[in-house]
Length: 219
Image 1 (cartoon, rainbow, N blue to C red):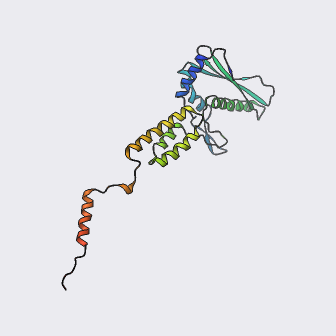
Image 2 (cartoon, rainbow, N blue to C red):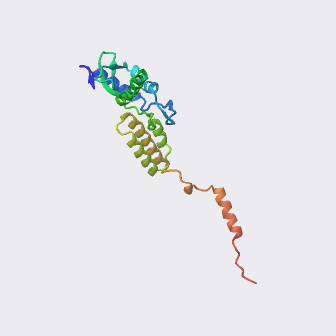
Image 3 (cartoon, helix red, strand yellow):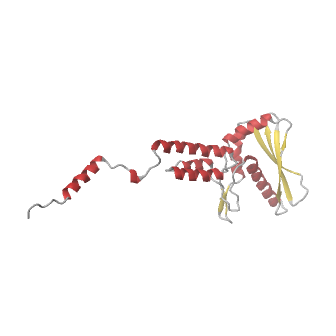
């Protein structure tokens, strides 16, 4: 990756953009051959553009000279309004030497470059499912009904998003919230621990008294 000589403004804006940027591209396209859904280029751009543009950033992607006709090279540049920038080049094999082949390679390269540069999860069209969003993970954590379940779910979600600081903050926030809630409520809902209403308890006591056998003193 290449940076401009000055990059303080760029880095600051990138950090702010990443805080509000989605961690997953929505699966909005389907692969009829593999019968699976995946996130196309439009979905990836929708995941990053609002956050970038609100922080004075734009993304530029274009093909650059390649040493071989078998490989397309895509340069992705993130430009700040101050003129500072960072860029990287991704090579992508070209399966077919025609317009469709190069177009397909370009689209793949654009998607993968965005995913790699911003840590965006993707559902590739090889049938692999994308990880769920941090919001979905937080929702799963908030459904936990005991400390044991909470610890197990949190550990799984933390492992899933390890390395994605923004997602970890969301998951950890939900964990802390539920930890406090369970502590306040005295653990979790347990049907066996429900206190019977006094009226019901008294009725059953009376019924019990009615059927208790009477001791026979005389015959």
